Length: 321
Image (cartoon, rainbow, N blue to C red; front, side, top):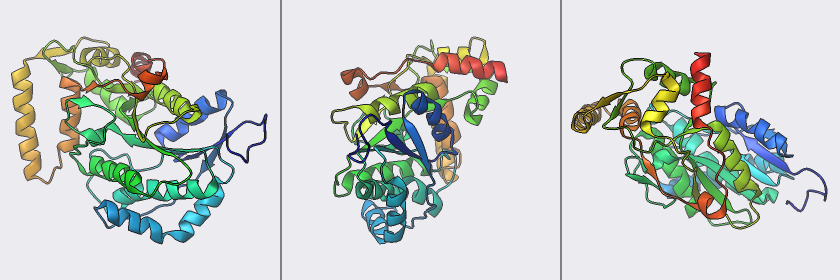
């Protein structure tokens, strides 16, 4: 607990990005666990660099913003960054890099100044791109403007001089919620003949629930021991077929594996010629057909795996559609 938190008093956790999907979902989970939530407005930043060294230099120059942010975080035991631009299909821009790469470093510096016990930055498993196995290593393969900006943020946090406040990048997987537009789109596709999987459909899917993610954030923030610099949201046991069945209320079509791989190769080739404009959409199709395996990590090793809720969340979203 932060030394500024009196004994017997509820800890204060500062959350940046309260208006976003995940940030707004955190309040109920944290409050029910006895945590006092303080929402802090994230500054809007832009970055003109594509390099870690440039991000660190830009962060060092933002002394006034860092000071103001440290004041807003004063007395917080844990700081959670749920801010950023969640635009998987968007183009690169200074705003994207500012929100997803520069901002996390500025918050980490401010959390140091404020004397916080832990800083959790919500990153994305998209940083590992097409790797066959998601894990907690620093090996990344970003494939789009969004995933490159998130990977740059992780790398910059790892390269900064460590302070008193330990930093953890938590890689969220494909997080779904009944109120999320991405989930509504998944439900629409799953309810049509376009709902399909490659082969038998038994491949693990990283599609997850916001409920489990928020519970995992709580567990990481409360953990009394050391939390690694990178942790991965645990798999919720879903397969590509079970995700579509829960979201659409019908069994998906089973396509030949060779046909799916050929379609994706062709699609990425065309997208590459068009400045990666279709990469985000193609990645969603790829995940629908093939999913992605996850290696057990910190959550499994420490007994901090949250209760799976993904199928219930998708079924609830289908009923709301």
